[in-house]
Amino acid sequence: MTQSPVIEARDVVRELGTTVKQRVVDGVSLDIAEGDFVSLTGASGSGKSTLLYLLGVLDRPTSGTVTVAGTDVSALSDDARARFRSENIGYVFQFHFLLPEFTALENVVLPLLRRGGIRDSEANARGLEALTALELGHLSARLPDQLSGGQQQRVAIARALAGRPRVLLADEPTGALDSASGEIVMQIFERLWGEGMTLVMVTHDSRFARRAPREISLKDGRIVETRSHDPR
Image (cartoon, rainbow, N blue to C red; front, side, top):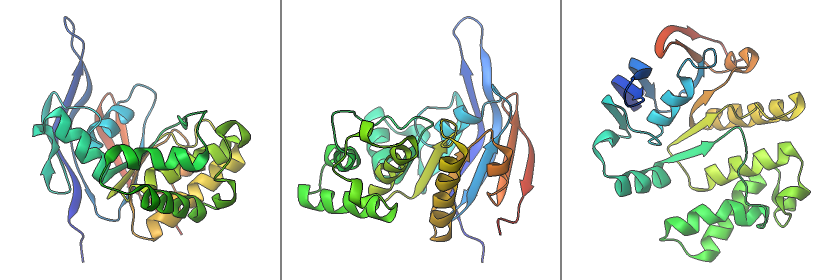
């Protein structure tokens, strides 16, 4: 049975610049179903990260529409977009962006508390649950500089998962890691996908791109190829 799309992009264009316009994303249409694992690939400047930000409601298209979980996010106000993001989408970036003065658990919990509507005790429980699932529960009281680079990135993944998102978006999540830590991150993503999470990942690493069942390649802001992979 085919799953319905959780993300739909239709004729999406993103232009940058004022006097001279540059089309960074040029008429992209795609569907991402619930439970998909998709990698976005292409050379530097191909538009893959910009497309990810459009799909993840971090940026607005110049034209076209992006629908996430049945909501046309292109039409939402800035405040509504921020609320929608916090409730539906988790993000993992190339750099972990952990706050150095807060413990691992505090870094994971802080976005939940900022979102509101949750007690401190529940937020802490969810944060510890996410860290434990990534085998970091025993390090929850450590500061970021007391963790390895791979551990810091796993804390960032836990932070994204603690919000229980519909979709997890990752922009070069292994780009700043050594090969062993990158492999651990990929294994986490594969496990999450196996548990039903929808993932979209930008990567320049062809080995990791092939481990997603669907790989979408971009060039000059356009989709030029879609490949299917057997992740087993």
